[in-house]
Length: 409
Ligand code: PMP
Image (tube, rainbow, N blue to C red; front, side):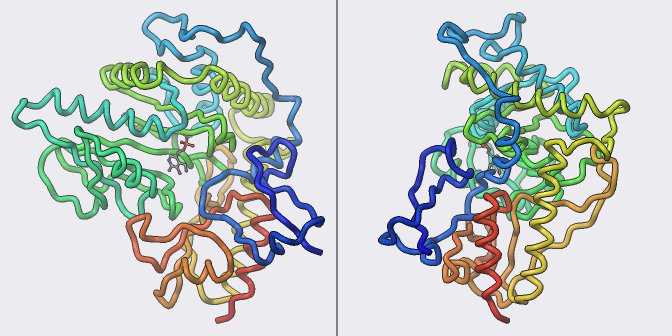
């Protein structure tokens, strides 16, 4: 049998792969010739869950709905934000217990990527406005390596005049204000993290994209001054481009809202409505089954149990293949009690951080197997590492394991 690939723009009518299979035409090459992509964090594994839900959680928008720029009827709120969106964010964090939201500002954005730069701009301009004119400078932005590749790439491209990417936080040794990004659990290596610089004048942005029970045990509600979350990794709806910041300080929040107003006059209301429906669907599922705020094990498989199960199974299978081949190393993670699952679970990170034991270029080895991965240098470390997404569709993940199994020590 010969399988050809046709790239699609959406996954409305396929298996979530963006790939339609046909055995009609062999000219584009067989599946063994085609590269499989595990280099991006595209959360396709969630498609299987949401496909079964479909009409039970849909949004209808009439022609006359959501026409105004303004959405918030509460004075002093985020003018572009649907009040039900803010409510859904508070609610899901209460249900899961992964972040403190009481008394905090919830600020929606076009994905957490947009909020990342908006937060940097708000923090850097606040730092500079507090300092003397003569001391104004580009505020250093650091993150311990291995760091999420897009931080560096976005900041180098943007060339902001008020902040500047300065790389590995472990090597940062300057006096004066700085911004440290703490990603926990970390992308790419899944480790839990805390700030490392801890100097006077520093502020922390905490990127909690993966602080959800499917990826890591929830041990306590996160409580940082600025926290970033994204629907892309919480429920898998990356295409809706919805993220949110949870902000403690009023002045920072107002600066962020002002920037959101200047750059894009807020965010898309349709996206907020979709996010609200999805988040409320997940919350409903657990609130109906959690009389004491604890997960009742017998109840029908909910969203987090489904995604936890899929990731846990994938990690088990990947570890078996990696051990058999003996060529790569994977990080070990210790189990902890998850307050949401009400049991001890090991982390199942969204990415496999694979180290080539010989110390040679790991991406080259993967390329020979026609597996596209993201190489260590993009995360600020050696080329002996690659990052592989664990969130791809079943089919791509199975092909990945098949190809990896052909490696011999
Ligand atoms: N932070 C981290 C650590 C991420 O991995 C990602 C997505 N890969 C983002 C932020 C951005 O997410 P989005 O823009 O889709 O909300």
